[in-house]
Image 1 (tube, one colour):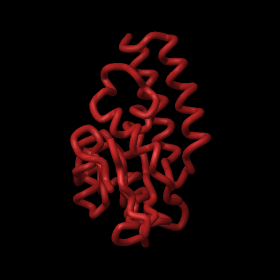
Image 2 (cartoon, helix red, strand yellow; image 1 turned 135 degrees about the vertical axis):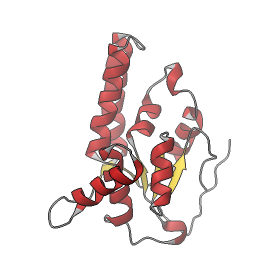
Image 3 (cartoon, rainbow, N blue to C red; image 1 turned 90 degrees about the vertical axis):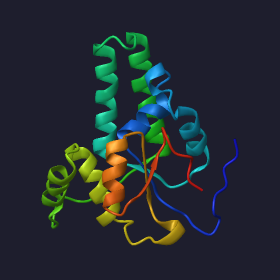
Image 4 (cartoon, rainbow, N blue to C red; image 1 turned 30 degrees about the horizontal axis):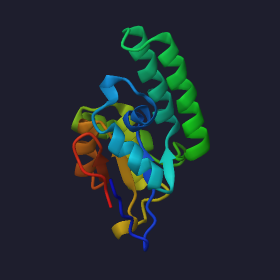
Length: 170
């Protein structure tokens, strides 16, 4: 499977919790889009996530284990791999809650789209954060397996790749 990258642009790739989970989990629930996501991860530069997404990914593994969808051994392995992947391959970046009306903006998005507050913080991070000035092919991209988040982020003019149903970005 070949991927091409525009060598004239460097975009920031924001991985949400659902994408982080797919990167490290091998259970059947994570199969849709997993191989394409892992292939893209291997070639993309400038990988970012938020502390909220890392925490949410840990919670997703806990729920899988508690619901007996994965074994204790898989749970420990997934958590260990998430720590390894995030420490070695990601920078943590999110909007500051100080000096901005970030919480109010995120709460407004919750009301508007009926999605999780953590998802709304991701949208605010991409649309108003450190790299929001990037345009064209350099524009930041949210990578997610969450279709509702993808719809809301696009409606807020964010660039999005929903990895379970769309082709990898170029």
